[in-house]
Length: 272
Ligand code: FES
Image 1: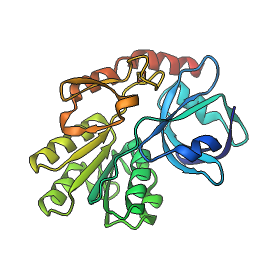
Image 2 (image 1 turned 180 degrees about the vertical axis):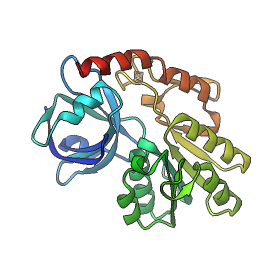
Image 3 (image 1 turned 90 degrees about the vertical axis):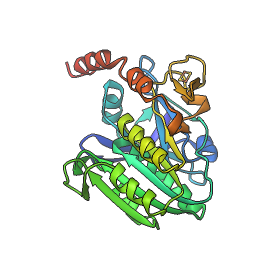
Image 4 (image 1 turned 90 degrees about the horizontal axis):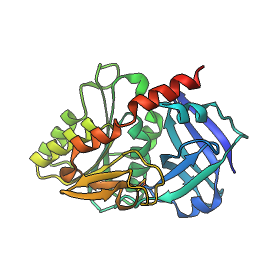
């Protein structure tokens, strides 16, 4: 059992848990993830490490309530325990030296934050583009503001915070100004896809952290398969980071939506 040491609520549906996990805290790297199972009948769901502290023996992950498992998780409080927390899983994000642009969309900001922080800590110049549909869905804004970034650009679809529009407009400007030489993107599939298309225009390398449905997280079930460069890859062991210009985005979007009806039913029953 893994004790929740601290619970933080960022918005109506976004939470952060700090969990006692000393072994995991010693091995975690930016870009890796963990899998959580709340009880013996529950599904296993992946979350990226948001932070970790080997000296104090804790790890943190951020989640948004989107289904039954995350709804159940959001009901837990500091002092409660989670049945299983497994990790670190997946490959760490490759930290090549350079002028980086880190793009995070929606709950993907929870992944973008530790990656941006690790890139800054490694001595790189980092510009962050945060994107969300509306101001209320922006998370970790204060934490991003505290990082010594080259620039922090916020976009919202409705213009309620920062620039009105999507992340590709500032990305295009940065590419045109030669202000960056590598990009990391994580968020909804359309955001990552159009970021990849923008980068391709400028011959700009771009890595995307993919988020397909996962079951075991160890390369056994095949559930997380994605097509990259025409080849089948398992996001849980080969990724989650891949060359975004090589990803088959239509295939990923279709696979992400495969259980939408069942998820909806499970959530309805959770409220009965
Ligand atoms: Fe099962 Fe990746 S989650 S193979």
